[in-house]
Amino acid sequence: MQQESNSGLLQAGTHDAPEDSLFATLAHVEHDVDDLIAALALLGVKRCSRCRQFFRCADPGALFDSGQLVCYNCIPAWWTLTSAQIGVADREQVEGKLASWLRKHHRGEVVKDVPGKVFDAASAAFQIVAKCVECAGSGELMKGERCRFCSGLGTVRIVVPK
Image 1 (spheres, one colour):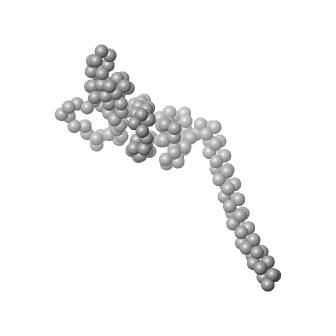
Image 2: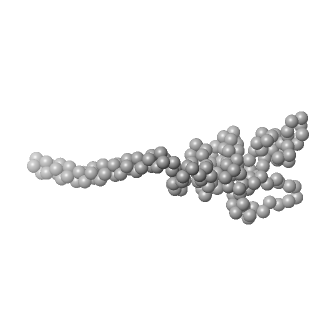
Image 3: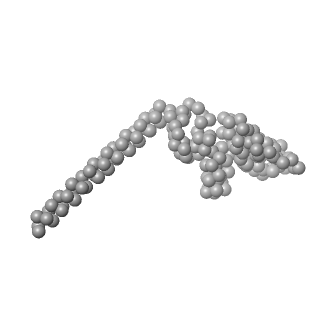
């Protein structure tokens, strides 16, 4: 009987050996992939946190950095999710940075909302409403004069055309 239980242990040990070997191999491959990603970063290549594609850091319009790197194609879905999850102060800070990045690198334009005129959203690849940087969202410039950048609304619409 003791011999049977010993052979059962041996079989169990033999059965675990390939799994342990597979686990060790997988851990080694994961380590190598992490090293490769770190090496790419040293060469100026970084990865979008959403789609996981790699982009050159030399192209400042490729990835938006808000604590996590997001490529231009992933911005609409990322912003919809992120803006709902962060607090107002953090959202205003990130949307200001995003609005600036869109204007600088992706032909984003400030579109003034005009009373009585409906904005044609079909012509936009992406749009965001952000706090006006010029008046800090107050709608007024010095001495109570209405902000000419946001028409006194305190917000501006940034539109990236298709």
